[in-house]
Length: 301
Image (cartoon, rainbow, N blue to C red; front, side, top):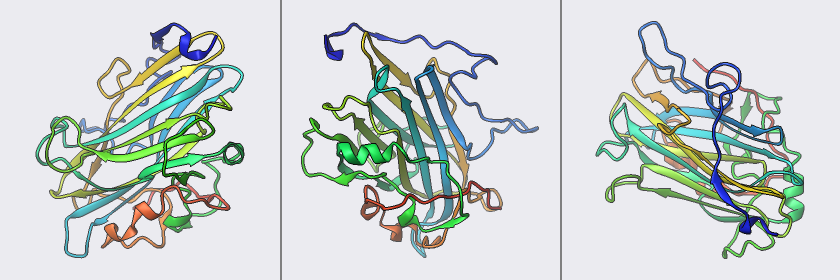
């Protein structure tokens, strides 16, 4: 019997060890009651010994979108999906990163504006490429400096003109308007589906990037949402991870105020911090790279 014919249900979430430690990461709170900025480990979730998911900030660069323009922020995020092909696996994953001003509701008039995202468009990964991709260790480290073009944004996906996913893992990425139905984009969406022939689940790693325009100085936040279909030999689960849902997932805060904004991650030598829109992320996301960049995590003050 195929996965599609199995009973569908929402899985329960159970704490493991310290309250909440099995399925979420909280913001640290300072002595003045303020949540930490740019939480590195955004989210984690473990369903069983053969299924887990992580989302981590890889890099944050503060600057301006143009030499005379608004403040801008480049954010690079790593997503990891671990599964066992012969057991449970991630069959379909939808990711959303929405941005709001301070603690105002998403959809307010002064939300940060999503100017560019990568990968943007429709991409595919064939069976042989996906096999190589599974050997990539996203946390490998050797260097503290790199170029944006060599970060492996979009992994080994290549641009595709159709969405036939019978023999490919398919990735679709687009900016989106959340909550309201007018104005500028305030979120980035990615949708990944497995290779239906292999049935090995979605590729285990996705590195994505977003460039924001932030018109007003001050604090803003990112709210991560993830909905995944998890299939196996005997059942079909659905996992939903959203801010404010029963997972208790907390937003990630950023601050563009002078003295509070800090870069995070590797130094990107080819990024002009005074002209972030000049990065042209659309031409980078989904490009094949012969060797994934191996970079250190570090905080720049």
